[in-house]
Amino acid sequence: MTVKAILEAKGHDVVTLGPNEKLSTAARMLVDHKIGALVITNSDEKIVGILSERDIVRVVGLKGAAALDELVRDVMTPKVSICNENHTVHEVMSIMTKNRFRHLPVEKDGKLSGIVSIGDVVKRRIEDAERETEQIKEYIATA
Image (cartoon, rainbow, N blue to C red):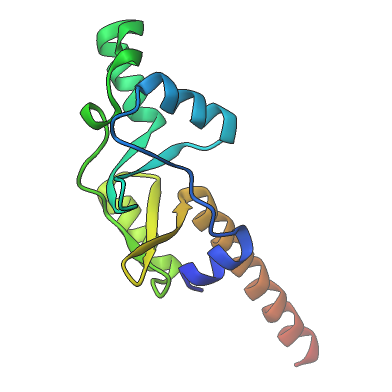
């Protein structure tokens, strides 16, 4: 199973935000879209960072509500790991586990083409396991 299959099932939509927006705007977007991370892009739509709920909670925990006036660029994670549509679910799980993050932007031909979350990956793994179980049951029943 590949990232391409996940994106075909869930869609290629990605919510992005510019690095010069306030954290309050980012927090509102996360709530409005019911997502856990925003991909931060520049005016050329190139990925310059990622901002997660955890990033916001961390800075608000340290600085209080005043942190919501800070700029996204000062809080985001600037070194973004990415994957492509040919990565397997296993490879993506490994990247996420090793680096301890839950969202991975997807690029195709140098352009942002989607995002996968740990929830997307787990859902796909469960579906694969259920399918394998059914195949084994069918094999046993016909043997």
